[in-house]
Image (cartoon, rainbow, N blue to C red; front, side, top):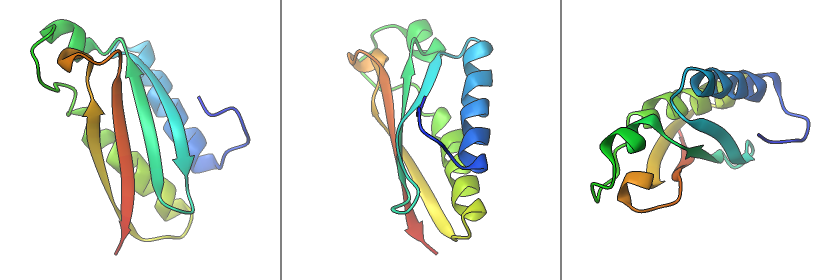
Length: 109
């Protein structure tokens, strides 16, 4: 997780990721976050979906994209900014990567 002081909305997002980890979906971490630019990155190690599918040659963890996008929207709204978040899985363990990675960016509304 990000080790420096974070806003309450980011803390809420971190808690959501901790709960997903505790429920066995993988080990989640916000690896980059720039609230001013509206960008972030999330890493998932040991994704339950990638482990279940095995090496299938394609990304399989896309279902997390909506949750991460919603969390980013919450962060932006709490900062007083209206933005449309987009999340994309850029690497997946089921596609040969060592971990699953997601990139988020927000377009102004």
